Image 1 (tube, rainbow, N blue to C red):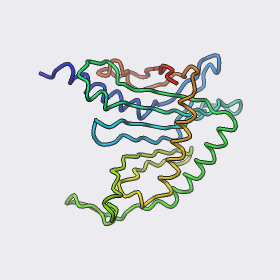
Image 2: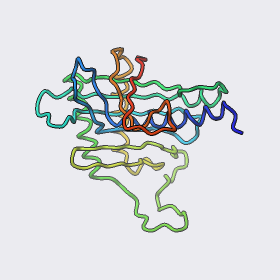
Image 3: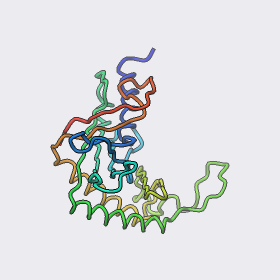
Length: 232
């Protein structure tokens, strides 16, 4: 029989991973807008191998309300810190992971900065260095999968998602960061700026919508709304 502390850790690993990936969409309070929502157009998830290591995510949400053609909601950025190391070391039974979720609604000037960074990211995707591999049947890795200098191996866990209303792309940067240095650099710039905006914001967070009730994860539901506590 699994110990309660072990069950707690397994449960929180699942909940934490879902919160890290982010919601299906975000709803503002009715005093801001009574029917609109914001969809994700960018996310960067850093969930390193090994549950002893902390995880982070950074994302951008924009108004995608059907039939809306004016008076759009201001874009929103989201930053998440998940203290997996503390959870792993403790045998305390927890119903919720040790996770902090920050949101920040962008001003016009902040939106311009995010727009500029996303345009650079979009351009970098046009020049992705994706190694040729073909049909791998023996678990072998393609040439140049790892950097020649072993000291530069980072065991990179960065996963990028981008949607431009026309196309979408999901890309893992991989261990050999020398393959796509521009993509790595611009994602780091986006992450740093999003974190900077979010951690100092103490206004009330918007509601996040998930496809599963994370407090009763055994049961599926059409929609489950969660408003993260303000931790800024």
